[in-house]
Image (cartoon, rainbow, N blue to C red; front, side, top):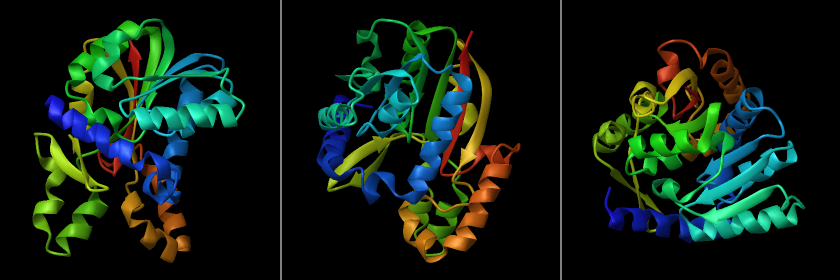
Length: 267
């Protein structure tokens, strides 16, 4: 991924920072997936620990973890997103538990210190130019036995395949299978992203981290851009959500979904 593509991605997120807490970045389907990561972090990392947030967005996750008793260093490649996080921390009265810095996932070599857990929600690592470099830096920053918890955009999203194939948009249906970074439009800007299967993603981390678990997010439920369908059929979608909760960790099924949640432990 080139410097120009990284700057494209930065500008795209800068352009939406002002309203990213709304439907674009936190509708009901997004919030449901977001809560999965919150609960997973609390299960895997003791309360009171120090967390590193990679791709903090507007700070919803950082503030939630600060409320739960963690200390958080929140980072993002978008300076506007970092500013939103800083303001949210202040308004919530939790600025003492949340530090912020403008830093992309490709710049982790600039950080120092030791963390008990590192998390990333909703695909910032899909925009990383070099996952192996991210893995090396995470191993340096994480204490022995510490946990990585990442929500990553997956390759196999049955809802998305059906949605676009039924509309005859076969090229769009195949976007997630590309091996090179793909251009995704947002607010008249471009985000450059790669998609992964869980085993592909873990391969970059395998030298320093063991795979603890992974599960599907948004497998039976539609992806967040189809939230209008969710709102038209709330009862049916609630049943689909229960299937996600019960079956999302099953073999084969856990390799699919709009996102997957992967947990790794430093060797």
